[in-house]
Length: 270
Image (tube, rainbow, N blue to C red; front, top):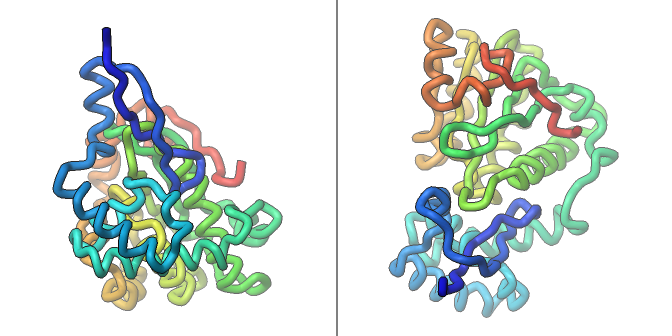
């Protein structure tokens, strides 16, 4: 008779994981669980971190181990630094997203740009987001606050698509047609801060494609604010090697049709 074992399953809440019991599966599924296997060393770190954060935020006891581990990994398993980072996130989530999520009615001007899409998955099973930088303009109506809400709106929807056994997503940032009218350093830094501070270890890789030379002026301003872990995940792709580079990471059946694949893009708000 097979023994029950714990399987860690992503909940629809982007930063929430719950534990369920399931029968032992075959080797293929075990391989798919590799992202959610917690080592004994990490488990010990999590135990100490949990004790530390629960002293200040007792309600954090409901947060799962995988979420704790993402903050630990973002701070190179330093318990004190990870605890500080997590407590900042926990307070932010309660105050900035008091209802747990944002609705489309709270980000109408950002949605109108039609600049973020979600469709398909890469060869590691991570959902794919496509962002069109050339469609972004500074939000004159809702301002940077609406942009922040939209970033959370999009990231929550993207993370809800991360399959069982995975923790990350990948992104393609397409800067085709980008010009100075699209330049928004304040907005870029706001989005970067949310990704790095409140969604640690969610980004698996990002491909920067169709990058115009003039964008590098803005990139030099943004780059110092990108943490080292995130920098390692950024790949600038030459136009001549665009499809071949993407095909190495994404099967043709999952590659967006705009890059020669077979998958149609779906707006993040649909």
